[in-house]
Length: 63
Image 1 (cartoon, rainbow, N blue to C red):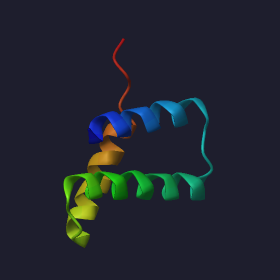
Image 2 (tube, rainbow, N blue to C red):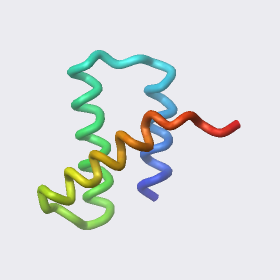
Image 3 (cartoon, one colour):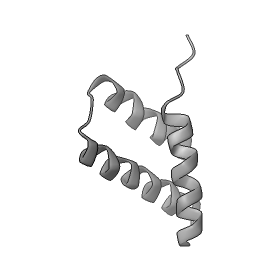
Image 4 (cartoon, one colour):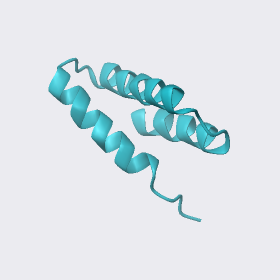
């Protein structure tokens, strides 16, 4: 479920470039959604989700 949400959000925002401050807020929103869906709330887990999110976000989509 979280992968679907993340992919949809990133596919939407790849077409519409974000400003620096907006991008940071967007990444935090996605991480918060993923954590809530996974049922986790610890700060270290948040950092792990954020680093994984950034790694996936800038990967080229496969054709």
